[in-house]
Amino acid sequence: MKKKIAGAAVGFIAIALIIFLINSLYTVRQNTYAVVSQFGKIVDVKDSPGIYIKNPFVQNVRMIDGMTQIYDIAPSDVMTSDKKSMIADLYILWRVEDPKKFVKTLSANKNNAKDRAGVSVYNAAKSAISSMTQDELIAARGEKLTATITEEADKDMEEYGIKILQAQIKSLDLPDDNKEAVYNRMISERNNIAAAYKAEGESKAQQIKNDTNKQVTVKQADARKQAAKLEAEGEAEYMKIMKDAYNDPEKAKFFNFTRSLDALKVSLKGNNKTIMLDKNSELAKLIYGSGLE
Image (cartoon, rainbow, N blue to C red; front, side):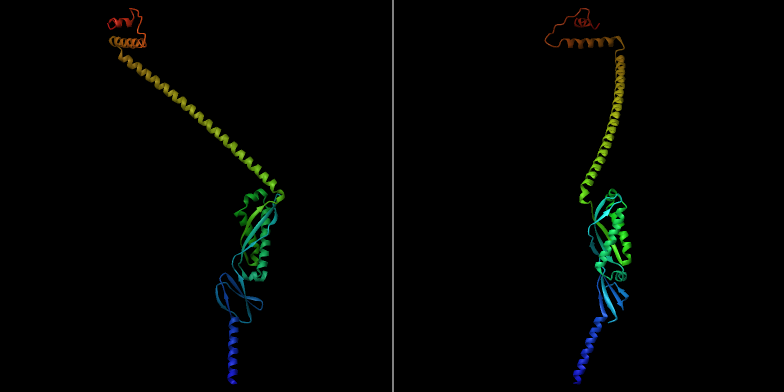
């Protein structure tokens, strides 16, 4: 009987020890916060992976996901500064940065966090968009607008222990009832811009063409002037050479002789070989052998 009682006592102690250990140890995984509270008050926060010890039955541990979360906000109407209605479709990347604030303000409830973050981002987007005209908004959408909305929403969510990593606009569209009118106006504006660029290009092209024609005319005139000058110099040189070559009677007589031969040669071309000459002409004297005297 004593052995049975002793065995039961050992078993009871073993079970109690197991229960004690189970309630004393807890494990923290990667990207997880462990919030330790005692009598409803947060006494410790663990954010490094590992096994930890707590006071059993007195302290409670609550695990909070520290990974980046995504939340897709429903499309909402926003108004620009020139009173044009737009439809903004956004999504949020967020995570818990301060688990103590997260527990105190939102009871560590992920749905509460998404709803509050959605309201904050929408208000930030509404504020940013309402400060711009529709044309300014279309031109600015992208990283600049995203950064503005993200920064403003992040400041608002700081008190909840939430970090807004990015508030991205997926689409910024027009309502169906005025979409066609706005598109037509945009097309007309782009056509006017294109026409202005085309007219400016044609004006510059004509100016370049006129300048080129002017340069060509000047160069041609200079070339003709230089050619006339060279031709005149050549003629002068030719006359000088001829003058030097026939500056005595014998050379002049020989020159006349060769000229007469050339003239006779030209006149004897064709089928008609008959020529009529005056007996006192140079050619007649040449034929009769008296032209070289």
